[in-house]
Amino acid sequence: MIIRARHAWGDRCVDRFLGMLAFVLHERDSDRLVIARDRFGIKPLYLAEQGRRLRFASTLPALLAAGDVDASIDPVGLHHYMTFHAVVPPPHTLLKGVRKFPPATIRVIEVDGRATDRLCWKPDMTRHAEDARLTAEDWRDQVLDGVRTSVKRRMVADVPVGVLLSGDVD
Image (tube, rainbow, N blue to C red; front, side, top):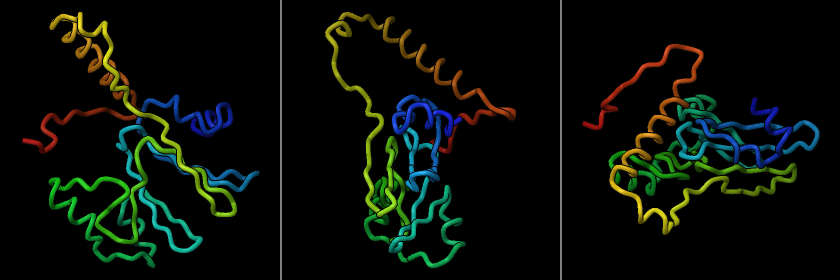
């Protein structure tokens, strides 16, 4: 599906995706590499760069298993981890040699090594005059509609779907 969307819409294909995704595509004809991650960074994507070599994986252990990655502690990542209750924002991780690919980003790496990033989504925080006229019930209905749409989109799966209510928050 991603390959077909990329073929049809090019780099703008990620603007049309609403789900959770992280992918890396190698374009055979141009020899370019295309990296993208979903809007909220739900699907993880880690990068380890060393010289002209780039490795990527969806987990830190996968990158470390390949070896030759600087696994020393990144003081900035550690600071975030200790300050924000285990949240380390991209591009940092706890390891100096590994970076998180940022959410809502598409990166194209040319054959000569030049890379360009593009933010492919940003929440609209604009205040609209017509929203001031909405009642509490209108807001309730809109939020409920948004939650239902979100749940409906996430219920699409090839396997049975389960729900965990607490998420270890409580």
